[in-house]
Image (cartoon, rainbow, N blue to C red; front, top):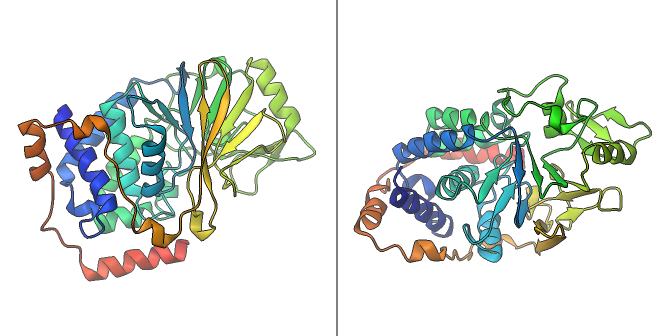
Length: 351
């Protein structure tokens, strides 16, 4: 895709979140999304399964289809390329706007590939997203082909990132299969994450004060790991801190072992109606960790949510960009009432 086409797509995604009368599926052509997905696959294919990143980064936890919170984070902390971001996975499922979230992240990744990094979460697995809402949303808003293409792209996502050499970032945590990070193949990105292996541990595990170093998780995949297991892992790999997501935090962040060895960050307010706050972590190149918190916003306040476009998008005045805005919409597209009823019924069951 040309840069002006990506810009037009980002513009239309952002404005569709604010303009409820002109939803996402009426704001973009599905062909543009197919092109975006192919370019995203190309960007992700070039990345190792474990990233090595240096510099100042905002680390964002679970979003779960909450487009308002994703945009609020970008507006508050700053859009790329002025700021760099590492996302820890779980972009889809359980929220109403998983498509808007994942397509916006894909577009930002293609627009600024060295400023936006996307890790894989346990909901970036087809058999999971097929069950917890993303499939139904994709079918209601577009079609099976788009869903298949997006879930195929999940297989290209990296699993973890080492930031400034001493902070290990991953969606879930560690398990008995995780030892020396340098021994993990940088080329391997398995499609389905099942069984007993390091990738299951990365995506599914949780910190917990359990009597043994590792105990199988009640989630059905992954392990609970205790403070001793984590200390040993950090020491072996010369890391200071593990930053992860994967669990809702009432205040947006949590130190499960009451220290900085492990920090959970959750970036989705009002998760499943729980009225929780959200947070992101800021990792500086000076190896300091700070937090930016986002307070719960009521549904009424969310209905008046105002999108502020990034400066680089507002400055675009090219004819190609304006023409792409016009031709990238599906303003005449209408969704069948039966599909709408079925989709919203499925969402109510999930929540």
